[in-house]
Amino acid sequence: MKDFIKVESHNVTPMEKQSVEIVERKGIGHPDSLADGISESVSRALSNMYIERYGRILHHNTDETQIVGGQSEPKFGGGEILDPIYILLVGRATTTVNGERLPYRHVALRAAEEYLKNTCKHLDINDVILDCKIGQGSVDLRGLYETKKHLANDTSFGVGFAPLSETETIVYNAERFINNEAVKKIPAIGEDVKVMGYRINDKIHLTAAIAFVDSLVPDKEHYISIKEEIQSLLESYLSRYTKRELKIYINTADRYDENLYYLTVTGLSMENGDDGSVGRGNRANGIITPGRPMSLEAAAGKNSVTHVGKMYNIISQEIASECVKAGNGDIQEAYVSILSQIGKDITDPQVVSVKLLMADGNVKESKYKAECEGIVENKLAELPELYKKVLSGKVSIF
Image 1 (tube, one colour):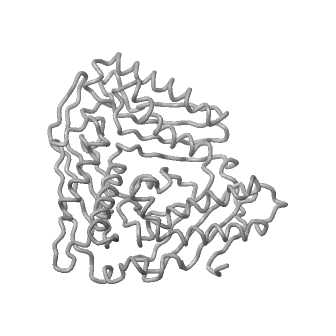
Image 2 (spheres, one colour):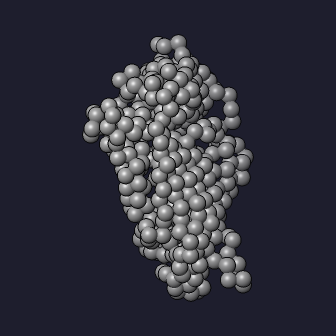
Image 3 (cartoon, rainbow, N blue to C red):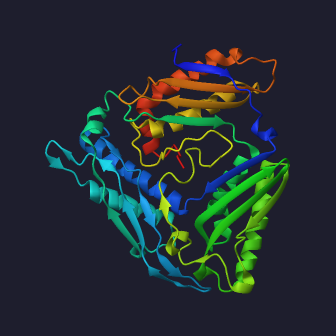
């Protein structure tokens, strides 16, 4: 086994036994998630262009998308957009090959527009200004970016953990349920959904902010009724994940006596002042967990060939999950950290730390040391092919 792989026991209180837990998920229509999604769609489009023309992915990182909120005037029955949303695509890419200038800006803008159309069904693309300032990467980075050698183009780390706690699972699935299932029964639900959860001992509280589409909400009574319906649907759906007491609160900033409601024209808060940036939202596992190890890397938009800020976060999660599975109940939790060194092969990191929290104190991590080391080696060996899973959409990174 390689000496940079370190498997050891982890002496911490299991998350489920800690008295306080806080978890957040920003839904697919949240400005930060939209910035992530746009960045990732641009990266995939550029990657496919490079593969089609040159048989491999060339240097690019489109992980700096910025969303500047517009202005709107929503009202029951339908309002209007007053000022457009401005979205700036920023990053670096290979723009010229052998003297041939590539249509990278056209490809990027088209990918961003298609992502918005596919994700935000109530958004009129004419109410969005898309701008592209993606430029050529630095000479130093491009010199390191040789896909056949798979050299890391950053010194960075990725982290992962498994399994998700009940609260983490509930927060993640609550948003997905609202945006995928509840909306089928309640079309007025917009894509901008944020769920914040906390647990104190055995009581779980969820606060959901859900943007409603004003043209589908005729009056105050209808607004209140669909809030109540969503709450009922959520309570029924989420009960499968826990036996703990669960309380759900929806749109708690509403003030009916002051005519304050979470109404939007598009189902998106970015229509009215809310801005967004890549990397400010969900981590690579889809949630934000201040009680767990996290990387501040913005995984979305980074290339999936040599940018370890993306790749190591993906495989760290996979390693942790597989280690827990291999434990057959003996491993209660697994935490993984992987550190690269710029210019060094991505399959040869400086260190891989695997920390195992054993369910039974009498079972030592040494029982599973070799198996977990083997999992790490297999995942590292798969890194040169990871881009295929990313481009096919089989890997979710926010």
